[in-house]
Picture 1 (cartoon, protein in one colour):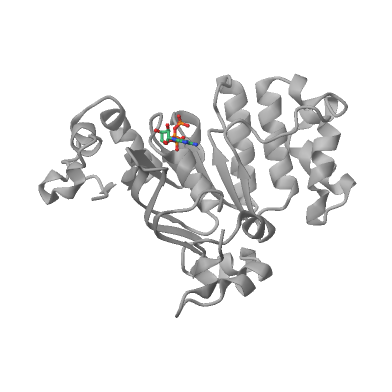
Picture 2 (cartoon, helix red, strand yellow):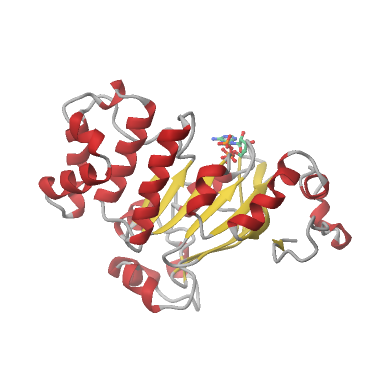
Length: 294
Ligand code: ATP
């Protein structure tokens, strides 16, 4: 993948910015930490993101909800530099980062927990944690930090990660992420296949991580737990962000989007009703400040 943005005329050299890291900038700049403008991406000839616009403020938790196949994971892969966009721009702390490779993004503090957890099943909990010491923390510090978030992992430290329950594996994935001292966390379906109690524990950890100043972008199919910790929520349908607002506002219209109400039928069809300016949906609550993206 080429570092296209660094070479682009008129675009500041973000390599230097990324090497400095953007944690400090995130507090100093009024700009969002992450912004997607008109992002398009696909697989082969099939486009699955049809122009995604999204703003992630520094220090905030943004939840993107959407049904199966909406393009949420693809969007996270594009943000993490793992999948090339075919159009649009990605800005990190105000710098265009299209084409910056994932290693460089990770080095500057962006950390992804992929769907399916991203742990090493054939290594023990301790060994999985040991692998994040490359970021500069000692093994002791990494373990202390991980076990303070998830005491249960301490009891399982010598167990093979792949033999733990799904919830414990997800805790380990989150523990590895926070031990790497990230500036920004990208979380893909943290709750997938887990019991509500475990999901609540994981999102409580997300709340604490956010309180430490880490910016978080999380995608989920189901809303309940994530909306409790999110500052902003967005709904993605068919490769576009179709609604954004406060979690309360989005929750109020979510069933409409998911269950085929007016918003869904006018925004989510394959033949791109958004191209038609008359197709902006009416909201259930006329006083709502919910933003409906065209
Ligand atoms: P889910 O909630 O089920 O994970 P999602 O919203 O994350 O869904 P994506 O996984 O981004 O959606 O998938 C969006 C579309 O892209 C789907 O139609 C999917 O089949 C397709 N897709 C995803 N990965 C690939 C791939 N590697 N090759 C081809 N098509 C893909």
